[in-house]
Length: 117
Image 1: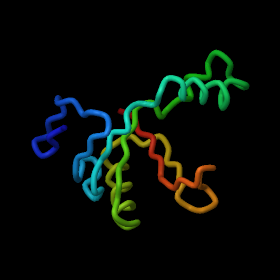
Image 2: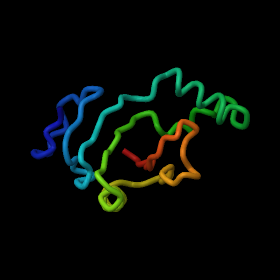
Image 3: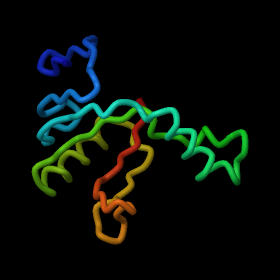
Image 4: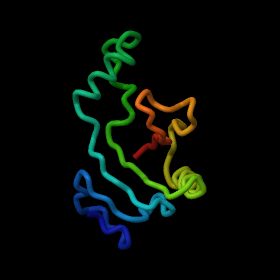
């Protein structure tokens, strides 16, 4: 895994691995690597969601190809983590899927934060 205590990021972070209290959001219990979005999932999203209006330019809207999952113990830590992320990264968008009206069709609840790397 990545040794965050020394600031080293040259070590591979394997899919499925976790590390505690990541540097970019110290209030998180851990960061989890779900891996990049699968090619097939990206193709479906680009075609179904953006293809009808953008045709050949539909891929420019895919902003969630590289991902990391941050897990927080409670809402206060989540808010503190969001504030830290906003201070340390260029935030493009925040999508709140936590409230009952914004849940996914599968009932998942999360906050999606899009940042420039």
